[in-house]
Image (cartoon, rainbow, N blue to C red; front, side, top):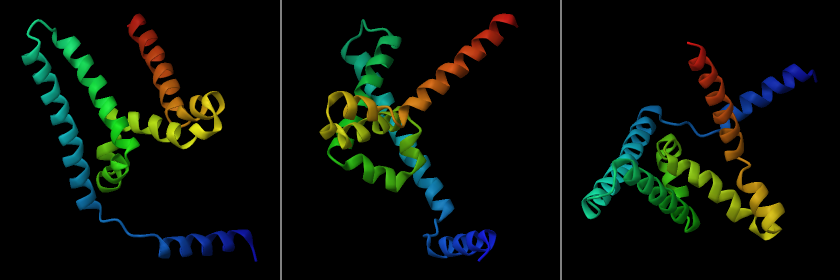
Length: 148
């Protein structure tokens, strides 16, 4: 059997077997959950500013991010964030909580392989390219901004 025909038949088989997603409800769930995460973050920041009146907005924002990252890591550790991700899709991945989840999940999965070769290496298997590309693009944009 020709490779092209075999690939075409395989793709048809996969398309027939994969579950169909309902695009509109999925978009609504992603929007609502992503918005809810942002509302929680804003509530944390406002609470910090109310509790500590001398705190600057920048410091409150930093502490809010730390708290959101901790909460997402904790929810990943107890298995709740995965269920949120299945329900919300990109709505739970795009905020910083999704980045925290992408680091915590592999770290938990590979901790049995040791601290260095398990936890430290696999922790950045998903997040590493994001960090490298973000850093490279920020350098390029910075150089362009310097000369404009």
